[in-house]
Length: 116
Image (cartoon, rainbow, N blue to C red; front, top):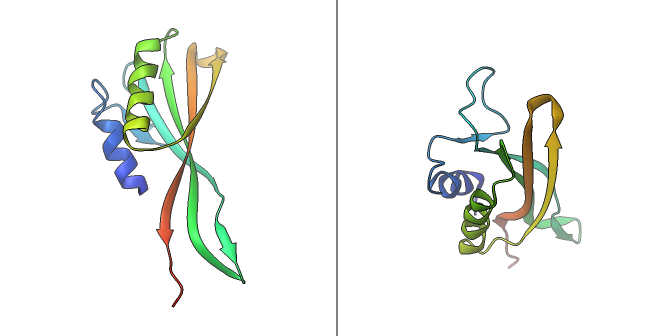
């Protein structure tokens, strides 16, 4: 799955079509909560013999909500599961924004190479 594929899948979640952005929405352009942002955090590539065989991109999918919103969490989790993405989850409250941030960390296999 590519980042573009992930974007498409997140936008297909009921109620989130126009509420998904990479990293952040432009200042003053964020939609009403809840919304989703996603960002690449690092890679955890598979390599050997001085070569990268698979590029594995770690991505945080962040669900922002005004209140604890288990229904939205279930929608995001169902979409990740539907796409075979293994996820870890943690929750935080952002005092300055008065909202919850639920973060799902997933790994995307971006490229695969084979040896002859």
